[in-house]
Length: 406
Length: 135
Image 1 (tube, one colour):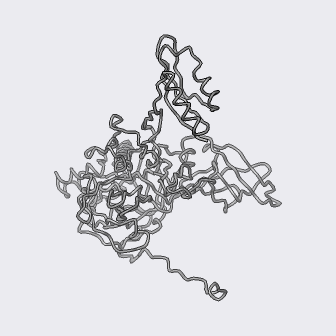
Image 2 (cartoon, rainbow over the protein chains, first blue to last red; image 1 turned 90 degrees about the vertical axis):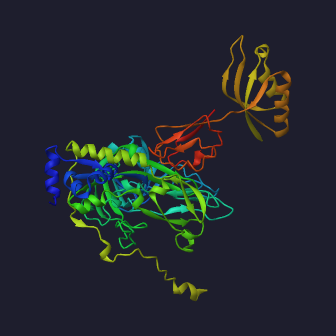
Image 3 (cartoon, rainbow over the protein chains, first blue to last red; image 1 turned 180 degrees about the vertical axis):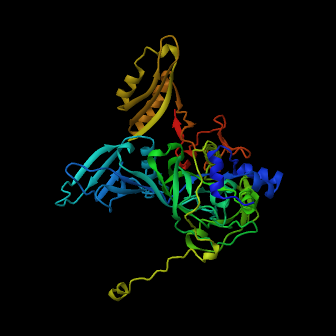
């Protein structure tokens, strides 16, 4: 009774595939049971929209006349990495515009960075390209200042080493006397607020917890375009403890993604500034999951109640590795608006947009129903829990010479 | 050097008097009119920024009040740029009056401007900078 991706694609081509979102799948399984749902549903679509700091874009500007090897590159004053061939660069989303006061006056505002440059490019705006080169016989030009647009680039693609974290910490602040400014937003002192950042039951990797269908080569929705997973994401750690539903109880799997910037929509590629922390990009990602068998039907029916996340203190616990989690809490509790930590009621605040995650899952569902988006079979699996792959700390080996000199 | 933004309301009988001109000359102030609506036969309104030394600045405000002009602190308004808001919810625990809140069922994030006290806390906290100040 198991289905194959090829069979599902055949149904999609004929307009006969049954496609539902991960939210809808919960109700279907509750009504019909997993066996029936495994037969009746072909594809479950997922979605997530939130800050994804390990993102960036490769751009190729085309050659100048005379030619130039752009070794230092700025886009709207945001430094991009030019240590590539002549007119290629990589702009990372957390790079801050030059001259920004950063956290010198804490908390800094971080108004403009690489994520904003990428949003502006996708929105079709003019961006100021400034470049310096040291001059060679083949690339004599040394300076350049010009307006460019995305359409002027030969190639421009998002290429993100780590996206769509499978589960994440819930951040709180145990400090008695100060609010803190983190990548999970402002955390009010004395357990004054709790931030969480996952679409929970709609989140891609939480609907395929063992990476059975999501792998290298999987076609995905990324920033409004169709893109691909090209590798395991950095910090991919499948060995994290899992609960009875197979769901990791902390940050676990990640994916490395790629997609054509020219086909993206600024609605799903939004530059972001985290007060006192820095710049980043809020990105929308959606992944369709083929319901191959009963297990996949069960996995894709995962509910917020079944997914728990660790509560972590970001005043000392996270930055200094002091103590473990303060407990675990489900996404159903987080979405109720308050959780209890150390006996205290704490209001919760989401950092990722569930509304937009739902919109992405719906958008993907419509594309598949219309036959515009076909599913893929992974060319290779992402490392699974049994791979033994662990997330390692950096083991510092200080320079010996430094001591001798002292 | 200090600057102060104020809202001035001119009663009808003062509209044809050169009040701003004499005030800035007398107290040696710089000024920048941000908004003005002055029409004959009705109350005039001006949003103005004065800059100058502390003491003359305060004296000037006192002088304006004496002439019959109503001086009010600027009323700031916080508005949500709907196009930029992604409805994440990062603002909701920061807003002290729950003017920004999330509907627990639909997960939509709403802004009730009636409840907003223009404390501006949400402005830098919004990751996509959707909360803006107007006056």
